[in-house]
Image (tube, rainbow, N blue to C red):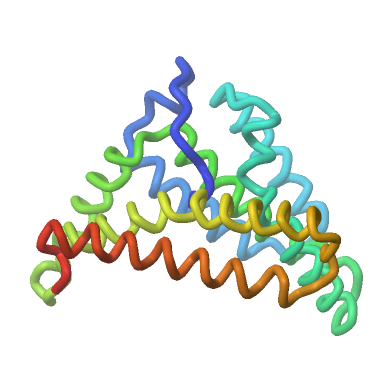
Length: 199
């Protein structure tokens, strides 16, 4: 859900309101958590592929949703292989990727404003316990919009590493990335403060 950007297409998924889609996403992710076998993961993969096809999402657009996870998933898979069996390791990493793919599908087929409006309505009853649905919705909106920005910063840092011949240096990647993200956070904070949302 955090890597997607709305793609306007005439598909059945695009016509479904944001609320039911968020509820279906929660149900789908819960179902993935309950899967423990490789055949179950295969069924989940088939379902995700069918849903992307129904939503008329191109393969390259689908790949963008999970591409940022590739290195994290590789490390996680290696760690899991060291502490458990192959089937469990593959199942765990695959389920995480499928959950992210499902979330990405929701954001690809739903406008961000519709998602935030649905979230505000869903959180409405929590006003009684001091939760401000508008602020929570704004926070989620900023989070969704920030992920592509951070990914872009990471890609620029990686390109600069390659240009300097320092592809294997963790420090050469981590330090500029942190600095870039902090600068972006400062800019975002100043924009929110200018709009009176600094409390």
